Length: 116
Image (tube, rainbow, N blue to C red; front, side):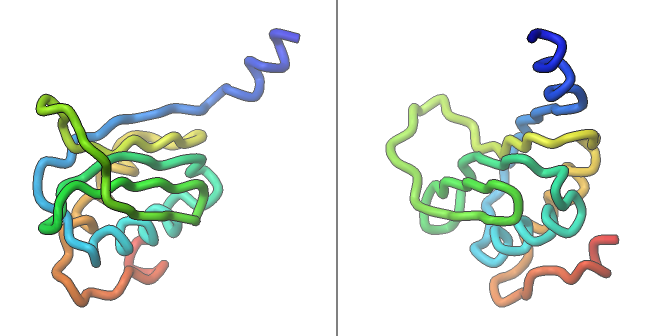
């Protein structure tokens, strides 16, 4: 029934957030861990393509499981971004975690206490 479907999608939102600066490999791991710590099961999906020193990188995450792989060919007009699909959370909660994408190489992912 239509009512049941509406009930399941209530509170689910998706935000596409531009990521203009170069992202570090350590930053990818740190951002994934920060999302897990901050959003937990409220993070339904995360995907996007960001620029690294080695080229464009595809981000795919479901819950706390993330993979990173080289992105295929992209149109010239493509803008790097991350899209997060969350339940009952605000865009600002995701945006506050974006600096983790740019931590220096060799930086360990954050602990739960560093995100709180």
